[in-house]
Length: 92
Image (cartoon, rainbow, N blue to C red):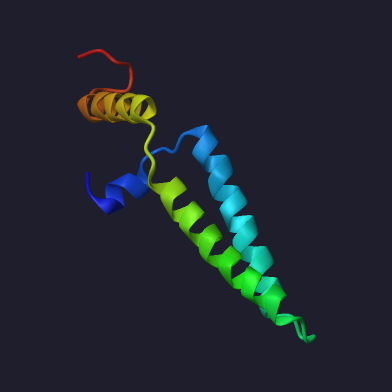
């Protein structure tokens, strides 16, 4: 499975929550880094590490695949493809 297919595949609920947490960390650290006031160097340094951690957490969480849902979607897509040339009333 290539990267594009993995990214488009369904993600398990736990990893969707982790992805949201990672994006929140990324947004928070971005706002701290871009703050117009002078902040201590330690705070800016921690915000930089938080940005990296949030980005990695989001990327890794997005790459996980829920195999059960994926197989169900593949089955539904195959059924739709088989039925696309049938008349609307379902009679062959």
